[in-house]
Image 1 (spheres, rainbow, N blue to C red):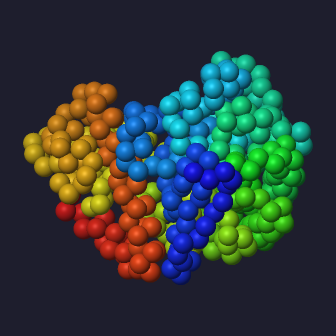
Image 2 (cartoon, rainbow, N blue to C red):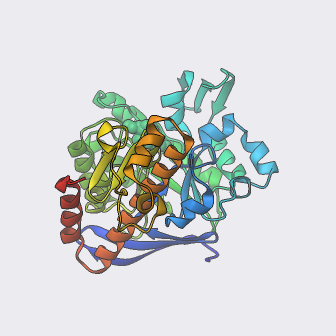
Length: 373
Ligand SMILES: CO[C@@H]1O[C@H](CNc2nc3cc4c(=O)[nH]c(N)nc4cc3[nH]2)[C@@H](O)[C@H]1O
């Protein structure tokens, strides 16, 4: 355990980086995948299981938690770690993205955003200062600045406006966050699919000397090639000795390709959401357990996995659970998927240390393509 937030690079292989973030609540091995725990729970999982598959950190959402059960209430109950019984690091998103994608009647101004809850229509205001205040009430370890994520495609003037607003909000969040040595506030690079705007955003945030940097405004439906091109433009502008977090990403293939371009941290609803919809991620590719072809298949998802959900249950049983909409179906597939994602991250970290990332990445991708599943 460390008194203060620090990031150490252990090995570099091309642009791929193996590092470790040290914080009072524990260490985060990078490249890292953060299971999404939106409302203070990683859906269909016990927190001990989340830890058991190898997660060092989970993600929470300011937007959801401020609406229900309320940030002040969580603070009164001892903060999000106590509330959700997860004593390890938590990163919270700032709410801007969720306001724009979930809430109703939202209005954005220099001051912040006003909106109505998607749950009960109640009115709320969220300024950069209030977002940081809420993340503090949740006792979040890594807090994200409030930003405006531009939906793509967008006009250059729109991309520039939102990117510049986000920079002003970054300054206000840095001031509101103040000096908290055991925690971190990350800036978020915006700039849509514009190289010029991405560089301007990254350089301005670098000048603020923040403890970490997220690449935002991506994984919003753009082609993978556009996302990767934005990483090739953005990462070189960010300080090498600070963590880089690609928000909302992604599939196993997205992760391999983004690590290869210098990204250290990921979060994505894919493994948990897919698990609830009958989809299993395996080293041989994705399996849709809804498909009737599994009805009589006695094989497990992966006989070599150390995860009981992958090793001890037949595909026929999983197919039955999914078809019958049994809760255990979502539980076992979520467990399998998060276990697969963490095994992938472990594989990636070891490959970078061995200076064999490119070869290993190709082997992993071939495994998916074999398709003998
Ligand atoms: C396209 O699939 C949907 O999209 C989400 C994943 N993609 C994503 N891109 C993001 C960008 C930002 C950002 O620019 N700023 C802040 N503060 N948070 C962000 C969070 C993000 N998440 C999933 O919810 C999924 O349902």
